[in-house]
Image (tube, rainbow, N blue to C red; front, side):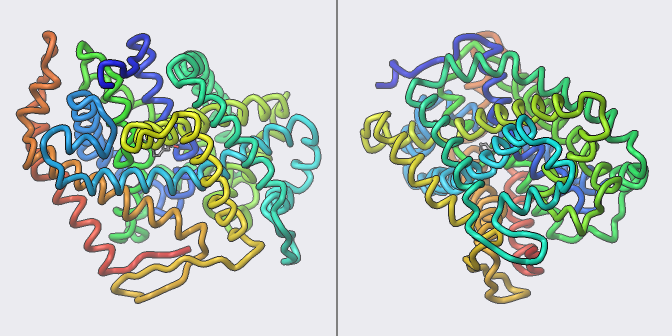
Length: 466
Ligand code: PHE
């Protein structure tokens, strides 16, 4: 089995595929909202700090153990002789599954906006908030209805995923990323110029630059940790799977630095596009946190741009592709696990998984407004609470499952399998890992302690559930 594993067709193919997994809705849909809630400037600093000192070593670790074991996330620990760590793999696979359930639906929103701008842009400009609400099943005077628009587009999004995955990832994902990523980047630069020159955006820029430490709580750290890992696709089994397709000649630390830099740059760009746009347009209360940020606030930016509608279509199209490469990486790692662990057929596993994800995702979309579907949450400060199901899914994955899986991986790498083996895996074929010592300290002490501390403290101080 193992020696039949696919390999990336080219060096740039791998970097772009990993970057494609990393750059996605997390950067553009989630990051600006989180940065806003976390106090702007200070969130950016905390975020950067976490990416450099926790994100980079975690990514190096996942890619290396993936490449060393040549297998999927659950099999990894078994293969390397430590079966009792398989729980970390299970948390990763289940987390990836839950993320994809809602990721597929938000991907559907993006598709909705591609079609919307292409066919009825004036309607969006006219009432950008109403358009967004309408997609999710409610209107301004509080009437709710079944969000069939969102559900329909989510179904199409998942269908596209399934078709591409059944055909095999390498060709498709690699090819798209080669031109899609640079194009997305260019588009963001154009939007940045327009957004920061909008009337009234200065306050937003100020907010994103000057740290307002009064907004920072322990919860901000957990939010930044969850966001950073989510955005880099860490703690979710993806990089282990991708690492297993990686030729031994690749320089893992160098690639990691590049991927982390690209991902963070895109997130920052999105933050500096969307937050000022929110300040310049409807204001935070109206636009709504999270979701609305990337959809509602940009309408004014496009409206006030020459050729804005064309830009809008191209922008959402690129975002759609970015979302697809991320969701495919998630589904691919689950499918890789099911086919290798339970010997399911690739086609059957893909169709089954995508269908179930879509259905669970419907609960996410329906709980936005139309139906009062609740999750359950427990922390020491607030006791048991019942957040909306959509928030529940995101909290469960970003704030528990990702950190826990990452914690398992770094304890395994730092204390059980040992950094020396990781370094040996990296230093093959003449590759030199100059920061090996720093890496060992980070993965043995800093990363596990920081993740554990953040997890415990935010359990004790409670989470701000929106
Ligand atoms: N990193 C992706 C994004 O930012 C989402 C993702 C999360 C992909 C976890 C894989 C694993 O959108």
